[in-house]
Image (cartoon, rainbow, N blue to C red):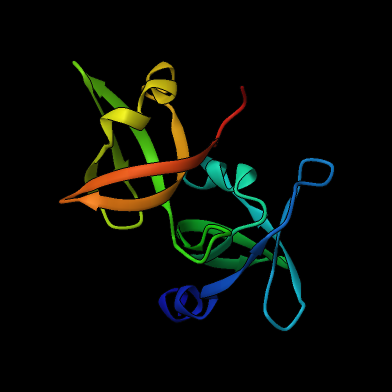
Length: 145
């Protein structure tokens, strides 16, 4: 019985992340329905991804959507961007992208401003400029400054 009930609560939703109001983050679905999100540790970065379209995997509990996993569908420029933790190793800056589950090198010419954010979550907007090399044109920190 519990197994059937647990499966019935599982949902995948896609929508626009709104700027938090009074600490609550909402997802606006294509039909206009606003759903409050329960973030937990896995979804805390969503608090800073307002203005992006995300797909969320989770469960509906009491009118809220409890986030289990998520990925960016549209980062605001039509691409999914690169979302993840920056890693500084020697002269290189890397991003462990949660959307693709791959590691990308940040183009050396554009990585200098990002070096100070090693170990922190970011959203990079840009383009691929080589094999697994990202050239960012904009970025956003996904945690409190």
